[in-house]
Amino acid sequence: MDKRRALHCLLATGVAVTMGAGLMGCSDQNKVQFKGVDVTGAEYAKDFSLPDADGKPRSIKDFAGKVTVVFFGYTQCPDVCPTTLQELVEAKQHMGAQGDKLQGVFVSVDPERDTPEVLKAYVGNFDPSMVALSGTPEQVAAMAKDFKVYYKKVEGTQPGTYTLDHTAGLYIYDPQGRLRIYQRYGAGAQTLAEDALTLLAQPAT
Image (cartoon, rainbow, N blue to C red):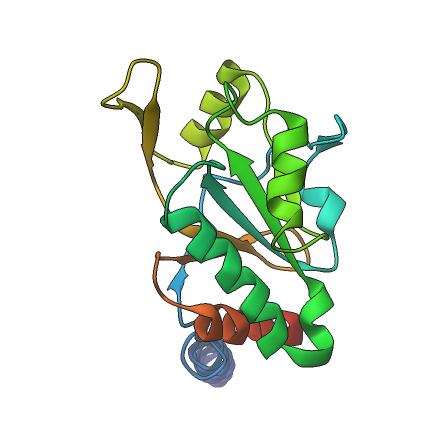
């Protein structure tokens, strides 16, 4: 009986050590390192549903196989939006042959002025493959809330004019459509390209 107990303890200890080593290897040695903020497993921004500039409903599933970058803004944004969209273009160039696997998705928080025609022309000036989304004010507000995006209308000096304060970070999804990275405004095209290549190099799970 004592021998059996001793053998049982030895086997149990061996299993525990092996499992512990395996978990340590997964968490420490094989953990993917991103330049941006790792938000893997986040309970927000899991999907979206808004029409594109052609009226076609879009969701993250439409971009399977690509690293998808979602960004909120508006076409009359004076600096932040054009700077960020240009960085998306430059990131694709940094990625070389894999640049076509980086998909930009621009979400307008100004449905009052950003008509489908305006949106299509705007993103087309940066990258013809970029997708622009909008919808009713209620639809846009719902998506922004799910993404924890802030935006607010700021009245201009002239009657009827306004700008919009808004969150300017990038939400980056892996080829399986899972939110993995949040990149703060100003991190740059090279940082985006490196994280995108890291996501593309990961095995599908």
